[in-house]
Each structure stands twice: as C-alpha cells, then as structure tokens.
Amino acid sequence: MDLLIGNRRYTGSKRIILEDIYKAIVPYCKGKIVFADLFAGTGVVSSFMLEKGMDVIVNDTLKSNFIAYQAWFGQGKIDIEKINRIIKEFNSLDGKKIKDNYFSNVYGDKYFSIIDAKKIGYIRDKVEEISLTEREKSVLITSLMYTTDKIANTVGHFEHFLSKKPEEKGIFLRPLKLEKFAGRAIIYNIDANELVRKIDCDIAYIDPPYNARQYINFYHVLENLVLWKKPTEFEGVSMKFKRDHLKSDYSRSKAPIVFKDLIDNLKAEVIVVSYNNTYFARSSASNNKISENELVQILSSKGKVITKEIKHKFFNSGKTNFKNHKEILYICKVGN
Ligand SMILES: C[S@@+](CC[C@H](N)C(=O)[O-])C[C@H]1O[C@@H](n2cnc3c(N)ncnc32)[C@H](O)[C@@H]1O
Figure 1 (spheres, helix red, strand yellow):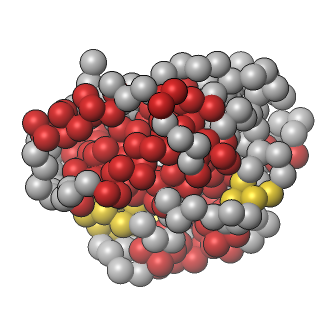
Figure 2 (spheres, rainbow, N blue to C red; figure 1 turned 45 degrees about the horizontal axis):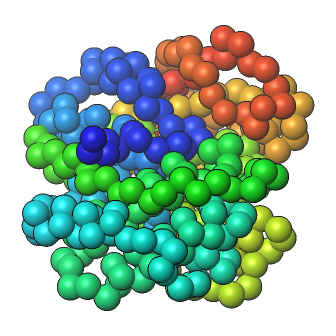
C-alpha cells in the first residue's frame, strides 16, 4: 500500500485531531485563505488544509520535515514510473551482499540490525548518485525516512534505542500516495520567528514544542539520514551528532520571550495556538516552558482570545498517566 503523510510516528502530531482543528477555524474562513503552519512537524495539518482548498505556508526547522514537505506538497517534476522502478530495485537488494557503510557503522546493532542499517546507508548513498529531479530525490528520501522510522529499535523516537538487540526487519520502501491539492504550498525551513517577519497570512497555526524535550534529540537519526553530511563526532551511547544549531528556543527557559516576539511580529487575521498542559508531569523535562497564563496574556495583546478544548491522548515519555488529558486551542481574532 502506498504511504500516506500521517504514516509516521511523531511526538505531538495532530493527526487525530485534524477535524477538530478545522472545525475551530471554519467560522473564520471566508473566501480564499492563506494558512500558515509555522511549526508544521509531519505536515499533516498543512495537508488537511490544502485538501480543503486553502493555500498553505508550511515550515519547520528540521530538514527531515522540510524534505517531506517537498515530497508531499512540492510542485517540482516527478516521473512516477521511474520512482516506482527505483523503489522496486531498492527493495530487491540483498543486504548480505552490501558492504559496511556510514549508516551501518554508526547505527548498526543499535537502532537497526547491521543488515538493515547497511541497506539504509546503501540506498541513501545511491539516491545521491542517480540522476533525479529535486522532487524525485525528496520523494525517495521521504520514503526511506518513513521506512527507517518504522523499523527502528525504539519506542517511537530516537532519544534512546531499546536494550534488546535489533531484529532484522527488512527495508521495504513504499511509494508515496501523492495528491493534487486544490491549494498551493509555499515551503520553508527556517526559524518561525524569522518567518513571521517575511509573510502575511489569514490564519496562523502555532504548534511549537512546549517542554525541554528537543525535537532534534527525538529525530537526530532521521535528520542525519536526510542531511547526509556524515558527521563523525557523536554524543553518548545514543549516537547524537553535534546539533546545537538545530535546538529550539521554545524548549528553553527563554520560550516566553521568543513566543512574545513571534506573536508581536505575526501578520495574521486569526491566530490559533495548540497547547497541552503537561505542567504537573513527574518528569521535569515534560514541564511546560510557557504557562497558560503567559500564553493568554501574550495573545491577548493582539485581540480577544477564546478557547476550544479537544480530548487528545498525547506523548509524555510514559512517566505520567494523563487520562482525559485535553489539547486546547487558543483562538485570537486579531484586532477584536
Ligand atoms: C509539536 S511539533 C508540531 C507537530 C505538527 N503540528 C504535526 O501535526 O505534526 C513542533 C515542531 O516545531 C518544530 N520547531 C521547533 N522550534 C522551531 C522553530 N523555532 N521554528 C520552526 N519550527 C520549530 C519542531 O521541529 C517540531 O517539528
């Protein structure tokens, strides 16, 4: 079966509350809408709004997310038959005949079996060698990334690998189910605070990280696979490459300051902020960096704020049991 955009594990993904988000913004949608998804993660929210006919500005600081947006939403040329042929060739590779490579040396026997890791590394090298358009390259890397994530010896992110030895699961790339959207996407890979200084939109959707858990720590293996600069220095047993420049201020104590700067510089008719309050979690890394009070105060400087509560099961590293935890949408009609 072909891959769908939501077929990946991603902390904080809004995949299961897309309808709720849409319902909350529909009263503000008159005519052609430009929807800005400033912290887009998987891109599922953008994809949903594109399907509804909105134009979308989609952004994330991680290249592994950006490459996926280019694959799913890009307008570049793509020869589907050629891609299917390449995927078929990759899927018929015999891992036992592949030599050790960068990926198997770094992550083999940790996040993946040696044979699976050899195949991933081999395929990623091949994608650089064969003649492809930018979009075709994005599609193949995205397909490889989704497969790599799916078979990883983890609980769903790469903060650590599991203590049990990784099994050989096999690398089977799947084609992407690419859609023709009614809306158009403009794709960015920059800090959201920089982006808001460049764009104008009707609805801005804001879904930043809210606690100390850095997304780059969760997805460093996928980011390294996409960037493919083959760094050789790593931290700790979890093999995290040097990534300070990819860490987010939204996961640091200055989060309220950067959030205020974001809101102050945002040019939008309506601002929608997703928030889930994990403040009383037992793990301090799960505590929110921006309190609800701070958030409402900052938003209120732009206009009247209303709240919508959505029931949502979410990630908290398993230390705290949140039954009936709610995701909250803060909606601010600017100027009201
Ligand atoms: C809660 S997740 C978004 C989930 C997304 N709504 C979805 O449904 O998949 C937050 C995202 O913000 C990104 N991020 C963190 N700091 C950022 C920044 N300063 N600018 C842009 N993106 C950032 C992270 O890489 C992460 O993907």
